[in-house]
Amino acid sequence: METYDSSQAPRFRLLLTQREAELRAVLRAAGSLSDEAAESESHDVTDFKDVATEQSLATVADAKVDHAAHELEQVLAALRRLDDATNGKSPGYGHCLDCGEAIDLRRLAALPATPYCTACQAIHEHERQPALRR
Image 1 (spheres, rainbow, N blue to C red):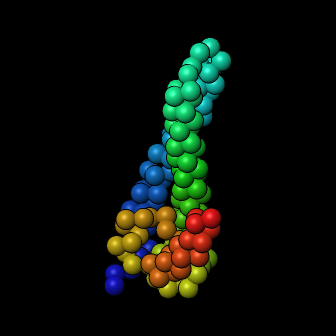
Image 2: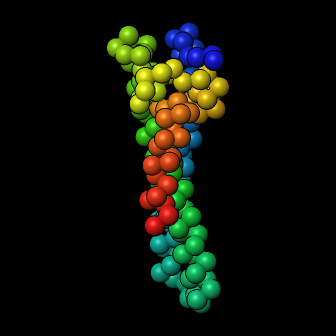
């Protein structure tokens, strides 16, 4: 298994900062869209189908914003871990927060902000499943 080393820090810093910018843009756009939606609601006469459609779209938009906000938190935390590892404060970036093992480089390349190895991620997802079924 190939793993992260500090010589790859510039590459991953670039990936993370680009993703941070994308997520901030999504959140900014969502903020301006909600302002526009509030203005249009006060002036339009709608039927029940239009209301249902708007509510569905709002639910999807809310989920998108929640996901972007959560991912942004992960990206910022990954950047802090990257800084910590670069400064020699801790193993930091590239190591699982739960077990401390190195995260496979292929996983980091696909998900640069991931805090967990695949085994620990599976445990977290399994623990979350009962809450989703309710």
